[in-house]
Image (cartoon, rainbow, N blue to C red; front, side, top):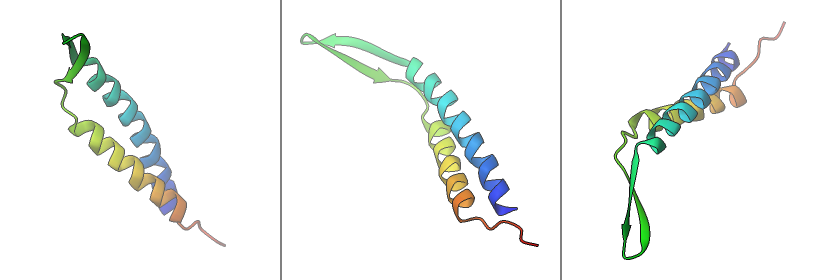
Length: 70
């Protein structure tokens, strides 16, 4: 049971990290400063951090989770 929950959390964490990460990257602005291009992100990184935490928790649960034995 614990392993199944871990796999579900792992999948949700991967999807969330990719989705919110792409959104955050697209919300960046760039400008030139002394000939160098500087990118500044105006995105909210909280959903990316939460998704990454869910991914890590799911990974831990799926690796250390016990399976049912008969």
